[in-house]
Length: 301
Image (tube, rainbow, N blue to C red; front, side, top):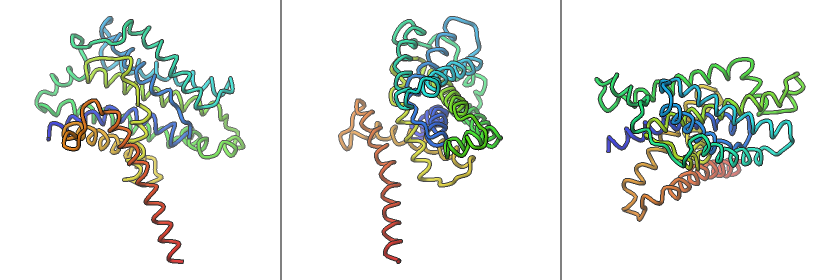
């Protein structure tokens, strides 16, 4: 049980970085961006190719993957802001294009990193006194650095402008801020984080696969919604913390369902079904809670 929870926490933190990217578009920018299903793989593909064919260290590879994902986000932003394509369709188009691009990058449907030097292997060797918790500690440190960096950015003048763009485009335009520029910035930052997460997950799991990004938007939204249900706050620090907490809870729930799901008939092949059910629960619980509070308020009057 302990090993399952440790493994789930490691995955939750790694995927939590992608969830922070989804949080930026879904909660901050109010932009339903489906690019993330493709940019997640882009990060994994770029990182894997560089680790196999070059001598770049695995930590620098994460930054390169971030840049590649940011480029993908900019494509979606340009399709929306410059060509007038709706936000949802712009994300879908970029995601479809990225499927072919990712195949071109990897040269095949999947790449193995079993013989490559990855960040998790380096950390496991360097932090050997921590034993099996070395990778978890590394994931925690890296994720917290990104979380606090994002918190700081969202509190800057540029970050406030980005948040205001999601709240009211008309209001922020009246303040002299270019809405299109804010959308491009938000999408680039969001997909950069998602790609960085993909690069980290590839190094953690030891492979990159062209289909590994399917459902990234769903798992990211699940983390945002679950965390937002448990931690209700409009403060930036608490909101980003809730996303990471939601990601770890989600991963723990999936791991436990796969491990003990046989009791109620679940099998390993039911992963997508379990994922969808968890998201449905995460969406329904806040709705039922709000509906109940409205009934109580109506009865009190």
